[in-house]
Amino acid sequence: MPRVLVVYAHPCAESFSAALHETTVQALTKAGWEVDDCDLNAEGFSPVLTAEERRNYHNTEINTAPVQGYVDRLRAADAMVLVFPVWNFGYPAILKGYFDRVFIPGVSFKLENGGVQGCLTNIRKLAAVTTYGATPMRAFLAGDPPRKLIKRAVWGVTKPGKVRYLALHDMNNATADQRGTFLKKVSAEMAVF
Ligand SMILES: Cc1cc2nc3c(=O)[nH]c(=O)nc-3n(C[C@H](O)[C@H](O)[C@H](O)COP(=O)(O)O)c2cc1C
Image (cartoon, rainbow, N blue to C red):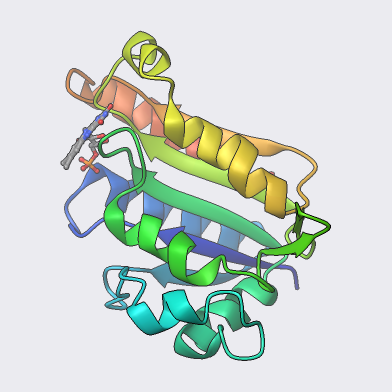
């Protein structure tokens, strides 16, 4: 059975992100995926790269030790779906810390002849499910860093055919109808992921 790692970052069970997370996991499970549901807040993931981790960052003999379980889950995945809200035009800190501490040399990339080579070739499908307070125009004018992080940086170290970036904007004004439509869209996309 193909395995998908869902990485979810929101602290509140009553949030719209929580509804998106639940919909994502349900639709993927129904579609036949074995879902590894990684709820960073619920798991108490520490996003802080320690001094020791920084000093050992390039030592691929030992750099995975503090996050070995997370590295194993990443390496066991055939696909990855990230579910998060946009905060300060980026990832919530806990998700940023996940990338800092788990996407490390020898895991997500290798430095070869001065260049970066992606290592997560096991990940053949990649999607993000996210929400913005901002309108699409405001996000565009801000340079839309989260879209670029997913579609360029994460894409660059994995091997997906295509990247699905599913975003609901203008959450500050979104109606219940718009939220419901987006939930349906996410469910439909995950059903054929
Ligand atoms: C700490 C924080 C920072 C935020 N920063 C941004 C931002 O930079 N750009 C944006 O479009 N929305 C921003 N928002 C709005 C969130 O994206 C919006 O509240 C979220 O998508 C709604 O989802 P939720 O109900 O699941 O929290 C921010 C919200 C919070 C709480």
